[in-house]
Length: 519
Image 1 (cartoon, rainbow, N blue to C red):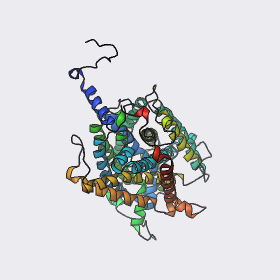
Image 2: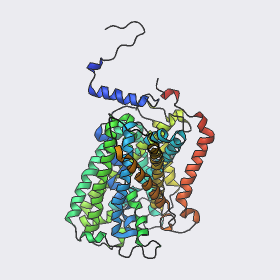
Image 3: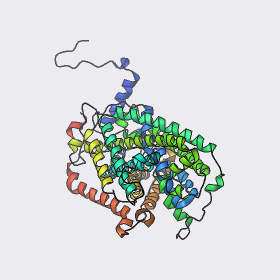
Image 4: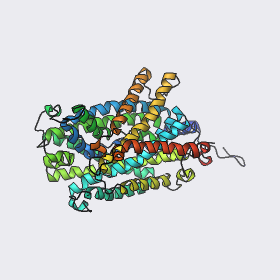
């Protein structure tokens, strides 16, 4: 059929369109309901979204990075914090599944809190999450230091590792190299990132399953080892329970970031269907695989009372149990896991910054929200987030507590950002104004109790993680009150300072930028 002057050629007839083309149009229509025009390339399939979620959680990264911390404060019985954290985070994840099914857009935490609580809550949720992402990227990058020098002394570039700040300074160097890599990969487009990420996730999953088998073959003691307190918590006001709450940070660090699967909603195929599934699969797989690794490690390590267990953690278990050759192969797989974890964290931060910027909610929003016509991805936020994460590392270069302090603050901010979604969602449920997707994931009558548990869990764990324990925030001299209360101070300054900037500077100028507005 010919077209007249000034007319656009007609698109393919509905009956001639493929199922993928029809689904892609439906996905774009749901985006237009937010007032946004489709700009990012939809190239991610079901496994890609699952890989994004599980690589952010990153079983091997989290377990190998903070196993020493859990054992140090609560001994082998700290393992029980793993199922405790899983059950709490499962309540949050179920709420997120409903939201991912109804609102499959980039920057999920920001857009969800905006839809549920209004623009002010939305901005604060997005601000907390994007700041937390930059801190979290720095925290993940530090994991190189816990693994690479144990593979070879070549990676201990600064000092020999025996100096009081050798490890912290070298961690900054190795972490900076990793962040430069993630910046370049994410700047070159989501397809390259997804390919590297998916390959890395496959390596991580295979390595994790093989590691479970190897550790199981070397078990030397029974399960009773993880139900004994062994004197931990003596002298604390809450006894062993107090020590257990401190050690639970090691598990809380691992099981978050599952919302990344939905944050890539504008680059995914059929995100309303695939994102909820990816969120649950990533969390459940991480719980099962990570829980077995931790359990069998505690049952297989030759000496359960070795001081090295609370210093070198799982790396010590692997090398002492499996031998140098097999142990080093496993540790190289951990390096791969750390790398793809950093890639996923960085990617999630980019989408969040992009989502906020196209609503003119950040300084220089028009630049941050600009999508590269060549790479099909926002390049400016990729570079900016990478630079800020490196700065966070550099200002802590001589801080021996760099691992626990940065990790703690990153987790707290993400838990608070999650609360800025689950609390408004609960208010909507109580008012009877929340409506789940009719065609996709829905909790039905279980929605209210699950949402209540998600809020209670998030609030309790946020308080637990931020509690001014000197052994976490001020373990070595010089001792100052502001270091011990660092979590409350840092998170408070970020929240209050950021919201003040929004209220007095940005508030009257927000709204979808013309270049990104749906026509």
